[in-house]
Length: 176
Image (tube, rainbow, N blue to C red; front, side):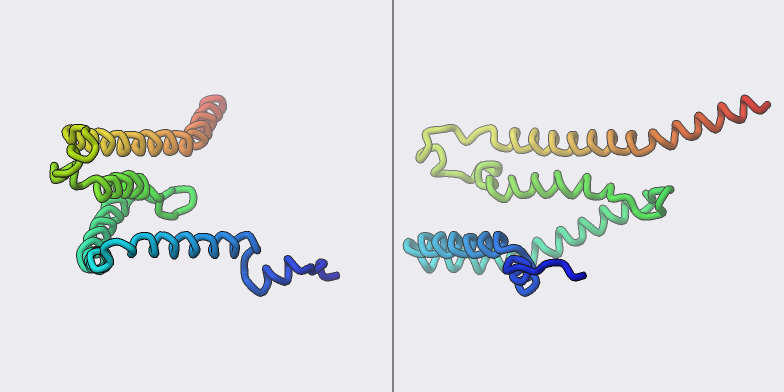
């Protein structure tokens, strides 16, 4: 007996996802087109140069850089295998996530972090001092939080193994 097929199931079979997914994708395209139109109404040539420069910088400099650093991090963690499953532990992700967030924050705030934000004080009447120290503190906090999560997860994962070893030791002592 085959399951009942209605219009939603037929749509999902043809499209590959739910109608809500299609609605969200179309909405995101509409927002992107609106933002592009608003962005290009000002200095069109400057925006186009910025986009081309950003794409070239990403593809020719940043992509090779973070690919090499990710390979180096994977190489550092190559020996950490889960003994129960024999698969590599995903410990490298505990470096990837805080590094990504710190890099993204640097990318957004680099003029102020590197004290290049000349108009910031004039435009906002706020001091541009302290961005470097705050970014370094946020980065340290991200890596510290990631290390704590890794430690706790490792401890929780190894706890049943320790209980089993203790039970085996007690059983051996009881049989002697």
